[in-house]
Image 1: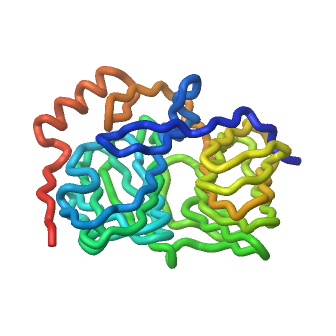
Image 2: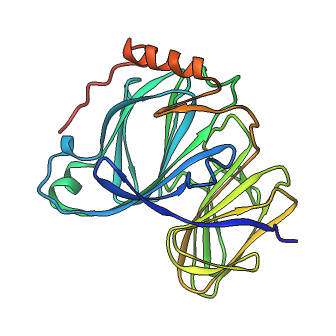
Length: 287
């Protein structure tokens, strides 16, 4: 039995600090799909002749959730106030739990910035339960080689978190989730079982096909009903996708910029703590 589709939402173009991104979540009428709060799809070609410190996103704080980055092309360099400095390459995942507070930056490597080249990644935000929001922050880079793969005749599915066909992903979460990224060649078909209690989102980076009886194209976000069943996809063109599914947390959300808490009082405390340096200080290192 396949899950019913609740909505199909094309990504909207947004301008983030001069960078034009595709944003399927939030959009008008859908602020979040619990526990997923935001999805940003960044794809561009760097022209070259730039400086590392002038590209990407400089030091900024977070609290109360996990900002996660899937790298599809190029590389992303993470530095943070805990002392982490890691380069995540194509096929890898940058998993960060902001917890009680962390300051980090996201830059691009010197060779890419100076010589130019393709860069594509998706960042999505995963909420954390109130009981865990103020736990210590941590960072975990996961390479493509460290990501379990389920391979079909015309498909590849990498398991970042949760379990599929007996293989478990390496990313730690504070609520039950299955997070996948994959590719389906033209004419290929996949079927993914999703627990009845999970909310689930399929986002197509490109390509086109049919999911659970509905035609969809690149940069569509498909939200499914919470019921028992599977998510199927048959590709009419070569397609890359991301599947986010998880148990809803079901708590109040108070968000202001990079802080996701449960009340406005907690958000104001996060602002004060950030201004006082309680979320750490990051002095970036450049080659």
